[in-house]
Length: 557
Image 1 (tube, one colour):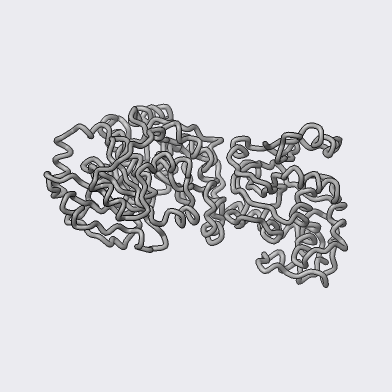
Image 2 (image 1 turned 45 degrees about the vertical axis):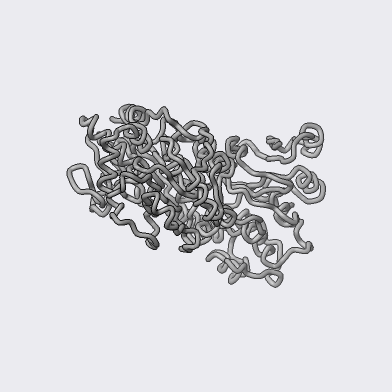
């Protein structure tokens, strides 16, 4: 249980904790200028540690903290951020020890002492705090570190913090060392031995923050620029998936709208290349922009943004995923992505029961979730009994009508290892048509089809299949929507979960036919062994075309 305490100078914090926090395991301290996002608190995974969590400043993500994705925080990691705030959830016993044994006047002081003195503080990457002002330490707190057993890099950071807070430096330059990941301002401070006026260092820091703000997708929508048309942006500008099916419905059933699809895959009156000289202007002036994934950095729409997303997730997403490589290697990775996500007006999900996952993974406090189903699955539901369409696709695929069909769709791995790929034995090949469908990013294509399946939508392949074999892909839910048999082949399950991360509570409801060894999988298929799968995350009452069209109509100027 987490207790939030409104902190003020008159509060006897120790007595309050002893009297009113007896059932709490963790405590959050906040003042009148700090907002605690309850929905994010509910998604934090706390244990017997204090936790550093993430935060925004005045509603926007302005940090460049690369420590998100690590398991534990270090003093160096915390200090090496463009902004510093008291972003901690205290283990109650840690907080009680701190307020009894260190010098402090405010929440920032207690946080700073926690980082210096606590043995281990874990990291949870959810955005719990929104700070409306810049917190600062007290002179009393900083001076208390003098004479303590503190490493030389931490001493440097304490001096830096003092100067930026208009406090005299605590340590002599002989006692300090420049951090290994020093910023430009750090190098200047050490070179000048902290002897420049405090205002000089503060101006340097201000310029660094201003530069940061210009690179992290902060903008306000300007509705005065809008024109009465709709723009679709498919996944990686591809003409496929939810955006394709909704686009075709809109253009066929609601021709009164001017509609554009940004893609290289098609040409014609409705299609614009993402390389077109005016493409940014076209997108940014659209009354409605419809996405299927993350929005590119250079595009800042002013209209209503409807996020279709690209499937019910099994793999952990954004704030739920540690993503250490992205956080460490991609400049301002979290800030750039977060500040775009908060501009989304609507987020489409396939079924209401999965909403809590998206609410944990993405900032949804400015976005309305609409659980009307995915357009690509409405296509499946409408055509599953259309024998003419099914026969047409089978004929184009040159499938043997006397055999059932297996669709094999392994998830793309960025490590490019092929050990997880299936080699189907002759006994399976003689009984089934086999279609290999790889991820768009996987160029290895170890197995080839007799027909180029790139001309077919994944949904068309599902439609003509009897069995779908996958592992961690959202295609699983699409296939289950029209009662296809789904087998999971996951020889790398533990490794994949460790490095990529899975929503196990979701996965465990659809893993009734999961196999780690291919021999057992093939035996189950040959013997027709199949267990029915829980339908909690399946939606067979899909009205996505109609529901999303209504959102569009409401948003058009």
